[in-house]
Image 1 (cartoon, rainbow, N blue to C red):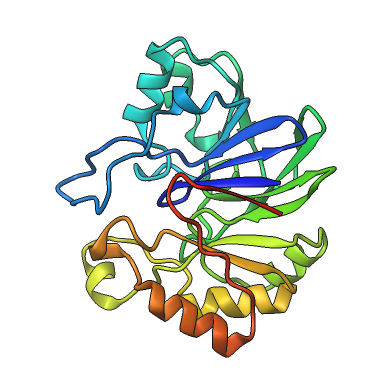
Image 2 (image 1 turned 30 degrees about the horizontal axis):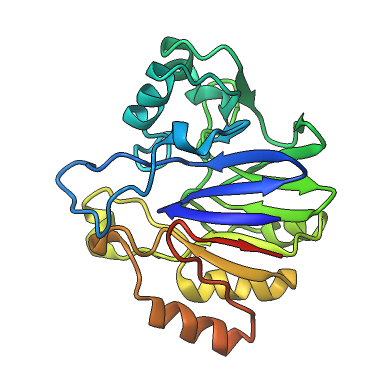
Length: 244
């Protein structure tokens, strides 16, 4: 597998001849927050075969990024939680995949399984469909877990272990009372992420920690948490591909 970091929870995954982009936030503004670095490219530049979206928050399902891609003629399949797909249809995407927990779909020889995700807690629509999802990505070259925005819940480690991923992409920005009061919904802390990786016997790839200082976590704290847990930490450099 080859992985390239795009910022926040955005990654380009290249495996078995398939190019998958996760949560592309490739636009240079979000509210009045200051990005620590500009978007490294456009979605069109990445030539994706598939885009997967974990949930509807604008730093994950970024409408300006998707609109620019569509305006350029881009129309690859896009998977998003079923309750959050309306904007994709409105933009004219022809290959919308309404993702539902534990209902796998494939692109080429890559199998993707959406998994229930708790963003602090699980959220569903009136039909019981989850509004936030993680994804297990299985290819002939290996298995990778993409958490999206994620909080721990009972049974998560056991669910991940069913598929034996070698690497976990997990948010490490955590949560606190100040951010909660501002309606900034939290994620796993770096300590929780490191422990989950240890429980799963996997390498930890940190995400959602370095783009916005007001909702991030110092890399030194992530490294310290990994050292205490005794897990391998793979820190991605922006726009630099790494393989395993």
